[in-house]
Amino acid sequence: MAKIKIKKADVWIDMTPMSDVMVLLLTFFMLTSTFVKQEPVKVQTPGSVSEIKVPENNVLNVLVGNDGKIFMSMDKTTDTQAALASVTDQFGITLTPAQEKAFLDDPMWGVPMQKLQAYLSLDKNTRPQELKNFGIPTDSVKGKTGDAAMSEFQLWVKAAKEANPDAKIAIKADEKTPYKTVKKIMSELQDMNENRYYLITQYKKAED
Amino acid sequence: MAAGKSKQKKMNVRVDFTPMVDMMMLLITFFMLCTSLAKPQTMELSMPSNDKNIQDQDKTVTKESYTITIYCTADNQIYYVAGMVKPEDPKCLKKTTWGAKGIRSVIINHTTEDGTQPTIDVMKAKIELDKKHENPDPKQKMPDSIYNQQLAQIKAGNINGRHINTLTVIIKATDDASYKNLVDALDEMNICSIGKYVIDKINDNDLKLLKENNVKL
Image (cartoon, rainbow over all chains, first blue to last red; front, top):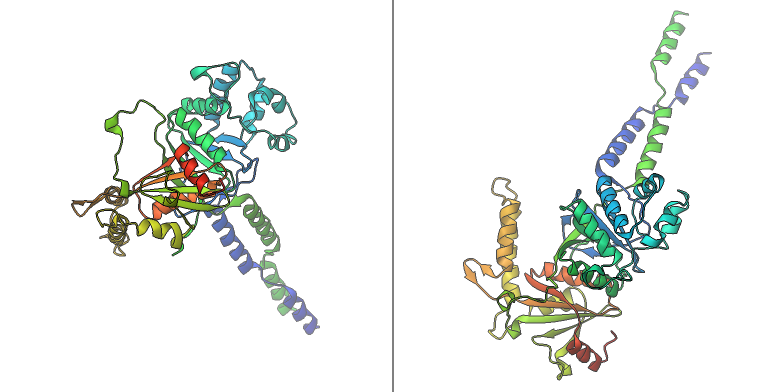
């Protein structure tokens, strides 16, 4: 009789230390990590020895895929909203509240203005798939000449800068992106007198 | 009987932590999958203005032997010209490799017409400054603001009250060079503490020179 009782008690495993460890791990992950932003294209940034961190606020992210597709995002929704309003205004497009909400829900934007309305009317689940095929055009808008002939990319940057004058431009490009694409973006930014920006890289130790 | 009762009480005090562990596991998996640990780094880049109406006084003039032009071309190849680019003399273009043994040693060991090696002097001064900055004693540690100020001074060639002319590096990349090449080139500028560098477009002279050397653009 007594023998059986002892056996029953032995089966019980104390989970307390394990949960202690788990809580520790959890706290570690919560404190050290940042949430991954959904990006339309996968980008592998090149390594550099630079140790400057990306500013956390007031950033205008420009994502460049290795096929040269450009996407953008801003850290504050209000800024995005203001930029969107300004750009749609210039193109004479009016978005329904549902479309605007869809635009703001997306982690990044990058659809040519002509297709924007059709894209935003799509279902929430099909949009990320569709977005991959687009990208902000960098050639000048048709039917305009001189200073007005800015590309959609430039218009977006201008609108974003107006929405938040402190916004810093951070370019995140894939390491395999041909220089041609990067050159195009840089010269377009230069044309608008945006001469200071950040290039996002990964930390790499300098080999000796 | 009395002994059995007390045993039962002891069992009751124990709380089963298994469900809690389950939940923690779930949470940890969630955090591991949805977050990233590594914070990306950045490079600050200032490009020259595209403004065509720059006055002559705003332009910087450098001596010929204080310049190096780097060409990043297709297939991760790298070439350089020390001094002026002379399209009529195809031999001025030299091939090198990426990394410490290639382009870095070219920049570091570049000797000017005055017989100086400005990069070595600048790098030495930077190492001295880094020592002051990374002093293990927190009281003697140099604040970041002063460090950055002095680093800028050193990069401009003002070392210990003396002024030396520093190198100017011109980085040019062809259309088929990758973005990685550009970042690597900028990285070398950082490592070699080059204060004056510029990313420039390839012009006709460069094209002619590269073509004569059968460089794949």
